[in-house]
Image (cartoon, rainbow, N blue to C red; front, top):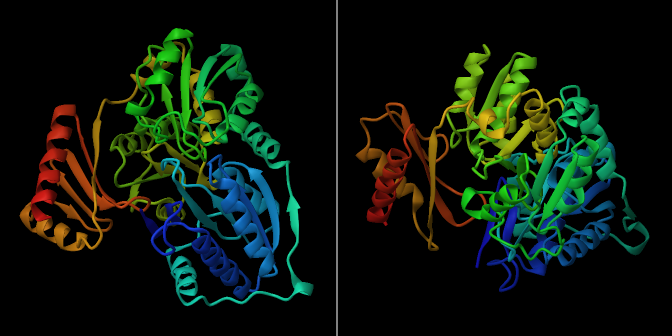
Length: 459
């Protein structure tokens, strides 16, 4: 069905022909290329490996592990884990890099290799290009039997991650404990089932009700934590008279909330609320990708900071955050990056910070949400056939809207007074994403529909 090579890693559907899908041959080839690139840097020979709960995860993991061992690399396997935990483990283990086996929010037939450097951050676009070239040319060589790498299992990283969150200065466990929160959590049949409940207990949450807690990779619904996929969570929050609902994606780097009446807090406002809390404690700048809500900019200005947009993709957000010395950043899809914790989207530290802020609010979640504006983002997509010239499509659309302010740093972003629309190809799926934001839901939807029609006409 698809094999996508981007700044978000090597991602594809399981099965089919090599080169068109993520087959065992592709897994070995890209793992070997990555391992060979690491060895060429002259750093140590240790790599951390972890995976989410996908059906194909064990198969892919064994292929990756044994390919790296065959290159002479020592593998530290943290097993079933989360993306942010593996990122932190690279630093804890003083490793040369890491591989996270997860397709994040994609459906169960997908899997991927997310590639990390020695800082536990996604490798740069330039380094990724080198890895892809090595894979294309099969520019790697395996070692003899006397130089094979070693294999070690680590089972301490879950507790290490929780301990680090508890020690973070802006996470206030006593404030959370005093509120006696009842929380419903949808962990979508993946590793959130292992990580989120013990974190909530450690934070002092009084009662945790788990949805889709069987860790089998057979996702109970579309795993992307969008409103249309969270009806079960919404109903459960009302049924159990819970204070809050929490949803994470399969690798636990995206986070969103449901209010006590079952309404959506809004995945765009996860970052806004956490940023508001952090900026109230420490002054500084913020970053989000240009597909994210303008509410973050407004919150930043309110606290005396400067807001900076970036291209979509975690590595792009992190790069811009470093450039402007941001104190908080992330993406409007529920991805929070706390730089003095680590430069990676982390739903777990996000939960600790969000609950710390909510605990200081006198009323419930709905009242807490009403502190922020009600902007609407219409999120849409158009599937692409092979061979479509997206660049030419965007050029035709840019020409049509030449009288409007346009940004071409990442696809095509067009501004209409206080509204905007952003068109871009996805890093993770063979689609064009069309996001539009306005003060009014109907206006946002109409802008998106208009641009979708423009794209279809160009096709």
